[in-house]
Structure formats: C-alpha cells, structure tokens
Image (cartoon, rainbow, N blue to C red; front, top):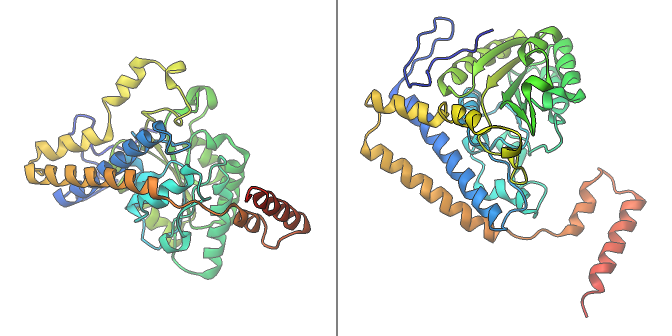
Amino acid sequence: MEPVQLLEPSGALRDDNEWELEVTPELCRGFYRQMRRARALDDAALNLQRQGELGLWLQSIGQEAAQVGSITALREDDYVFPSYREHAAALCRGITPAELLIQWRGNAHSGWDPAAYRFHIYTLVLAAQLPHATGYAMGVQRDGTDEVVAAYFGDGASSEGDANEAFNWAAAADVPLLFFCQNNQWAISTPTGTQMRAPLHQRATGFGLESHLVDGNDVLAVHAVTRSVVERIRAGGGPALIEATTYRLAGHSTSDDPGRYRSDSELDSWRARDPLTRLETLLRTRDWSDDAFSTEVDEECRDLAAQTRTVCRELPLGDISELFGTVLAEETPLLADERGRYQELLASFVD
C-alpha cells in the first residue's frame, strides 16, 4: 500500500480523487498556525527541562502534521485517548501549557479534567490506553450515540500485547473506534524494520480492521483520510486503523541520545520532509501568506513560549498525602496505614 499524499515534500499539491479535500487558504493557514504553536511549546518545554525546571519532556517535533491533521478531523465531543507525546493534539483541544507541564514537573499525575476537554490524561505505559479506548467505545456503542473514540499510539506500542488484544477486541465487538498510529520509525532505539516484519496497517487488516496508510508529514492528507474514515465509523462502519508515516526528529525523550543509534544522513533526509516547511512552502508559492500573517503567527508563538516559561515556574506543589486516595476506589487498611506513616514522617520535620 502506498501512503496517501496530497501535499508533496516540495510543497506542490497533488490530486487524489479518492481522498478529496477542498484546500483553501483559510484551512492551510489554520493548520500552519496550530503546528507552529505546537513547535513553540515543544521548544520552550525542552529548554525548561534542560534548565532543570521539568523532570522529563518528550518532544513531538516532526509529528505536528499527523496530530493536527487528525485531531481537527474529529468532532469536539469525540473522546480521545492519547499516549504521552500528543502535545499538538492537546493544544488543538484547548489544553493549556500549565495543564500540560504539571505532570512533567512532577507536581501532579495530570493537569486537566478529561471530561472537560474530551481528551484523556496522558498514558505513560506503552499501549495501556488502547484497551481503555476499546472499553470506552463499547460503552458508547451501548449508549447508542454517534460518538467516535480515537486512540493515539506509536509504532513501538503496536508490539505490546495490549495493542494486539485491543485490535482484536475492537474488531470483534465492532466498536466505533479509530486507532491512529504515528509511525515515527523508532521504538526508542529499535528501528521499525527490526521491530516488525509486516507493516502495521497489514497486521491490522488481519484483525479485521479497515486499515489505511497516509503520509504523516502531509497535514492535508492526514486530515482528508481521517475525516473520511471517521465519517464511516460514525455511520456504523466499525473500527479502523490509520498508520501515519512520520519521523521523530528529536530523541525519544530528553533522557535519550539518538545520535547513538541513528545516522546524521537519516536525520537530514527526514528534516527535508519537515511537515512545517512543506506547508509553509505551499502558503508562500500560492500567495496564501503575507508579512502580516507571518508576523502574527511569530508573535503568537513567542507569546506562547513566554507563557510556557512563566507558568511552568509558577505551578503549585501538590500535597503528596492526596496520592494515597487515588490509588484505589476505596481505601484499603494498607493504604490507610501507609498514609498515616507518611504523615507521621512529615510531622517529624516540624521541629
């Protein structure tokens, strides 16, 4: 299967009768603004981590088109289960820098109300969100609504047992669920070619999922394919999987040194396919962007970066005692004892 592509790396548009999309200046400028905002947040958060203000950060640089193109194809009430790198998608849903950063600063388990944004908290355990999404979709199915559930994950997570169980369960139950894989070519230091012998979209077909392959660095193609697939799911067509081929331009996390396992030439070849550069070229060659628009976006990104730096340092410390009450629905004698001993330990420092 060849990946669907509507916008070539050169910035030229390509016709595709199967995946039609009305490409307007407004649509492209909107995508560009969201992708630039995501990268501005990413850069600011990386600098904060290097300064010791964040314990860890996982960058989404290079994957902005896959996230912006897909999340904007969903309805605002469609529930989303992310992994831990979906910062661009989170910003599109209105989640603030403070809400995104508090987990990585170590002040709270998560910073936002999932119900308010229809966007679940980040899942750090690989593929654990996929059975959760499947179960939630079963609930939607029983409620009889036309809501679609979407679950983001990476190529590395697709090798987990949880992922394969979720694929099979979702297909067998025929639930309204979209699996969206951002194949960024690396499962930490393991390349896709070593990790699997058959592409994910082929494996998904074997589970009974309708599967599609799209150029994940082409925001227009991602949007067109996701919109069409979601419409089919919403109409009762059953679950589907989209594999978006993209690239993780940074390391797996700020604790990772990607120079130890991938070459500079590989990185350079994917930088030439940067999703932001590709869309910016289209805007420039079609005269859909002028100095006023560029200045506006630049200023908005600078403001977002400044806000990110400010709110990070102002994040309130949480009360660790509260964590004992969030482990289980009902507190057990063991948890009560542990909380009591912790409070005694705190009290011992008063003098």
